[in-house]
Length: 220
Ligand SMILES: [Zn+2]
Image (cartoon, rainbow, N blue to C red; front, side):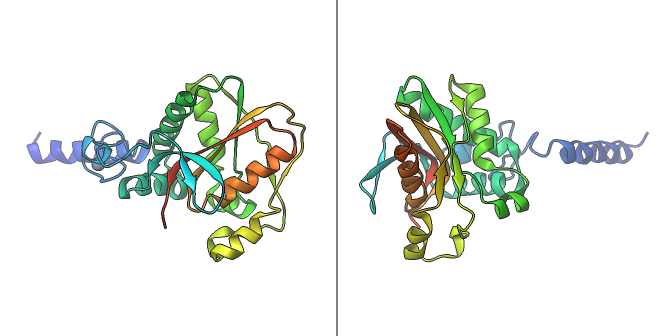
């Protein structure tokens, strides 16, 4: 058999394999060959945040895993808009590490639910996925506690002031949370308004402590 023919077969097998397992040997950030899901070069540009960050618009602290670098943005977009679950697993791993460092016993994990239109578009709830993966890695349970009110508009299209108005009555909690400790997660936060008002809704139902954890903090 000629070498060119063998190479052609090899190439076709590789293409089929990549169609089934698209990230088997490529970095999800830069697309370069890599045995790891994120290559060493890209991982160097993911800057972990050790502590909490104060939200400038609220008297509130949030625990983001990382700064919103170019690499983090790529991973998050791949996960959210291309349903790349390798990317999702990496993000969940970062969050699990962050949450275990918070050292809170008996906390219940919950999340900001996607809007119905986002769910229809994407086919999955990214924060629910993150919760599920975090629970498979560390000893914590999750539950969907927050229900979005039906008249909430998509945040993306709104100005900063409109966003806050939109969020004030955005969440409902249908159960008594007296004395419960909650870890509330979201993916990317900008002003932190969504987390802030969701936390208020949980506290109104009796939550004793609510810690806010995000994948990344964007300054935009
Ligand atoms: Zn890379």
